[in-house]
Length: 366
Image (cartoon, rainbow, N blue to C red):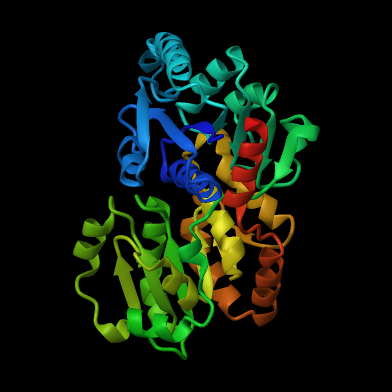
């Protein structure tokens, strides 16, 4: 008999992509599986999920606003209203199991599932669980994680280390170096740095690249730089049209992430859980500059999980302007360190996470 599954959460691409990947894996296992998404009104899942071919219902929910406590006055009422709506969604859809991927909508929906005794699974992407997931983890049938040491937050007997679902197309880089050289019109013989700050961009990384461009060019280092949509226009206005032989390629967004990864000798990135999952499969030396603007500073904790295994270099956001360019140039000249970082990050790779998580969802649905 076909199963009915609700997947809840979203808020950022880092939550939405794994949710859709799990849904796709469930459909591949049994195309009769009925899937309903529950997201937060006004957040990007309300657009991205239908674009992926799935139905979504929105809850009127927000997160706790740290900037100005007055913004939180309506939060208790929104939570209560969202739990009520979640109970109605469960009553109408009659799910066999519920999946929470994190984000604002995940909490009310999983709480409602626990009240109705519907089995649920939590997909915890980060190395540090937030307050909501820690609370909900007490009654979860399974908690799928990507990092070691998660028994500090969840019951050990319910934890499964699956990794985070990643974009398969982005990490398929084998034998693509020549294609990448042609695509970016770069020199195959020169070292290349790839900088990615997420689809919206990372102000600190962009500032550092503006400061370091001249040094890279002087040292014969090529740069593939994804600025993100918030910053692209301003950066192009500052640097103008660079000649092809500058070796600097500035993009608002990289549509061929596989070729960017294939071209890179060193990657500079933020430390979101989904990004780290991809970097482990790409197996290149990585410098992580965690975003300081995230709940519970979880990106720093994600990065540290790699640093303790000598699988990445961490530079704090506040030190990036003084240290990032120098550390990058130093790493590019240290072949032994680059090989060690590549070897160690490769050992942390967890492929096919979406399939493993989907299999666990179907198990609890029985």
